[in-house]
Length: 415
Figure 1 (spheres, rainbow, N blue to C red):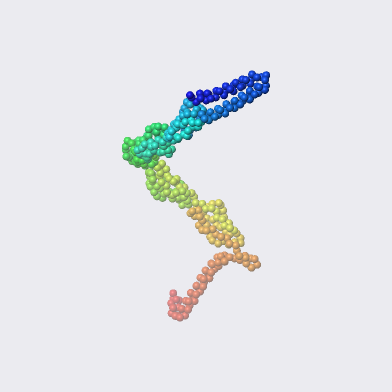
Figure 2: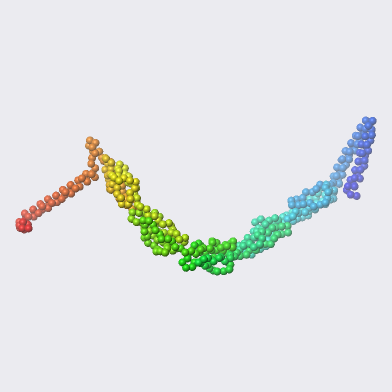
């Protein structure tokens, strides 16, 4: 006998009694007291029936749908709640493997303990790569990607990554092959070495030019990871710089024409001019002088300015080379230094600017003559006095000598 039939056989008598009592109560409409008694009996029977069903469910229980663990699914055709004695089985989701038993059974309204866990599938090693390695930065469990990394000078050939699926790594592991660069195109008026059909990674090619041509660019190029040479191949060019000319300047030395690559010349400026720029320039690969040719600018001196003084005549903002200027002090001031200056090389005057010093006040508030002015006036007179003194002394000396020897006087008179 099944569980359902067993429960039905127990419940059926009580259910029939309940229906009879309800029917009897409904037929006694004209007898209220008896009808009420019948309804009370029906209610008592229904309570007993409910209690009985609860007892039956506990003793002969049913189980609701069981709950599994992480990454588990329940595949069954059982209808829930399931009767006592029912068994169901859990399975692990895709990419996971089971550890333990996944079957549980319903007993007295309770499922037995689930003794299974689902672990992610581990693909392990994807294999070895010659001249490279496998990057497992995402791990080796289900859902992870592994990437092939090649050593320097090698490139990946094939699928760059493989995927860890439910049955292991999916896809073929890539290989690492040596990087090769095709031979470059020849250059006009030049050549390179060594000459090969293909070049391995990091191999270097050296270029040279023919005749008077010069390399414009890098002399060497190298095979790179992308299979191309770097930098770009050079060109062979003829270098010829134009005649260097500088206004108010002249060549002071250096190469003679024609001016080829790396030819250098040196300039100097004419008298009265100063140079702006470098005096030596060199012919570069682009047939241009480097740095730019210098300039020879006229020498000019700024107008001198002195405190408490002024320019005597010809005052102007600037003065050309070898032009002069005369300065004087204002009334009450004396000049110390040279009053006349000349514009010289390097935009400088021939002497430091003079200084105007205020004269000192004498007795009665009159201005005393400065020592410089007094000495200037006394100097010629002092020289004359010294000359007269020297002549007088010399004449006296001769007279004294004649007094000592008369014959000398006689000789002197004859002469």
